[in-house]
Image (cartoon, rainbow, N blue to C red; front, side):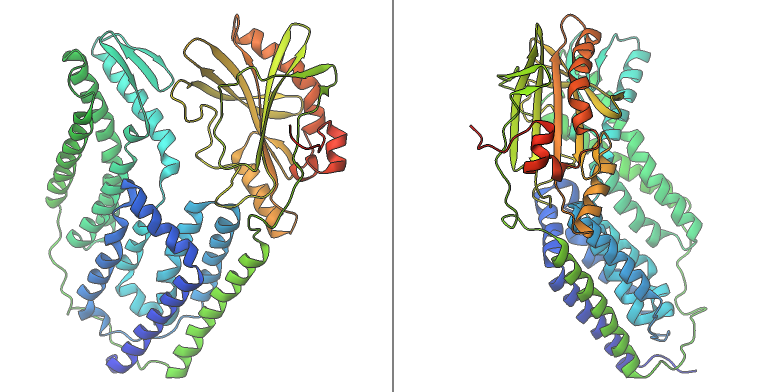
Length: 516
């Protein structure tokens, strides 16, 4: 039984650094995208300090890892391959959250594969802390906005103040309020989780205490954000909308968050453990494997990375490699006749479609608008199912009043009520993917990924049909249902890629003439 020699330690460390640099070079676009999000989004700015913090935490534990042996772990290569598989899915499907998370998780897995179980166990938390460098969390924005609105309105009403609510918008006698992205509390949650995880590691030695405190750090900012929103609304209400409605709105929010973090650490300190004795109970190192074994498994890990990188280049289509015919809407869908759009000033937001089509169909006194965004190929720069897509577009004059789903003619549609300054519109939308129409963004994304990996392409389209709510929503729904009786049978099972090919175009009534 001997202690780990500096020679073997430096070799293992050198191999890890080599693999990290190789991974960053081979997956350069992914890591560059991570850094870009750190720079552009205040929510993820903390990513810059995660790696230096991890290095410090690893060095802080040196008294323990100097006493364990470096022994490569072949099993880790399976996890490396699985992680790269997740990265591949994220990269080809344009799901940046999955792509970025997998790229970050790859780094500690490479440490495990080269340095082995004993060494990795000693620095397990610092390696796991790297996960906070991944710029993910946007999927929480919508549910957090909904919770903030629910909590705020319920609390205000419990105080006896009348509130009228429509979706994320609500009105008090003193003025109008809305819950926007900045009000979701996502910044608070991510910052609190990052700081809470670090604090739990430095303060507690028992794993269950660390887990409880991290859970506390996740739940506390959710409640605190709701209270922050209530306080801001009350300040605005009782000051006759003179306070907490401008820049001071954000200042109050961050001051309140600082108080919450201080309180969280103050409470956590009551349960702090005694500092861990790094000398006691340190495992004794066994003689490590031959040097050539370490090098062999390091290069095996490199080969896995190169293999997945080559696979990604083989299946992903770049813009400019695919050409498609310019399209126009059909002059007729059964007895419905094409005319000018009902809402020429309305422009839904789709993430960089190759082409959009907008018109309206008339049958007697009934009129139905139809909008289509077409994606002959999809990637991170052009995506049918992007989280930024929304029917309200970027114009603040449109408000989403409600969103639900309903079955029509063999498939589900997303039913959205959109309100403008002087009108309200009922809209039915859906995704057209490789397996036809669906209202599920997840299904549309899975079909896209499967099409890419099997070489069938990633063509997709977003459809919206709409009618003015006049006199009521039920009347508008009847007109839309009447139109969909003619359109739905032609698109329900039709793959998007075939829908816009010349032969497929003729079958569903959409031709490939040059767009006017």
